[in-house]
Amino acid sequence: MRLIMATNNQGKVKELSALLSSDFEVLSLKEAGFEIEVEEDGTTFTENAVKKALETYKVTKTPSIGDDSGLCVEALSGAPGIYSARWAGEGASQDELIGKLHSELSGKENRKAKFVSVIALAFSEEDIVIAEGECQGVIIDEKRGDGGFGYDPVFYVPSLGKTFSELSLDEKNKISHRANALFALCDKLKERGILK
Figure 1 (cartoon, one colour):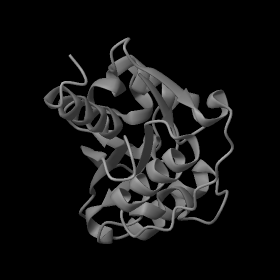
Figure 2: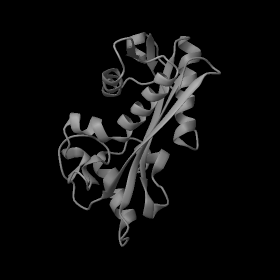
Figure 3: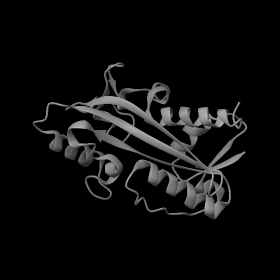
């Protein structure tokens, strides 16, 4: 079965392909020959993921996947949340995003945070499967590690003793919010008999 992912991020496409069986061929929008810009104007991760999946399905008429994810910090009432990528302004650098996070957390003792990911798979306009995943951690003051992107250098996972940026791709793909959402999606597809 062919699936089109509402992204041109090859990393996301690879991650999904690795988890799904060889019965599935996952393509980015570009690989499938489409150019679609979906405005992320939902108020939740779920709304944005569903909108991406539906808009892509309507244009491609092929089962389509949309995802949305971000960082939710307890002491900041869940911010930056759905605005994670543009919290410090459109096109902000990693340093600017982390700088804003540290500034907002200044003087706050509670550093608990979680990454959240929601994946929506639209088989049709009426048939949409939604799965969510999380990864718990804490925000640390100093950046550590060279891998990952966004807030990864300051998102520390106590059980592993590492930030997301210090994890290998294999380690990250076992515990990340996106991996957990993909595992949940695979479970739902197994329940339907779509995945073995």
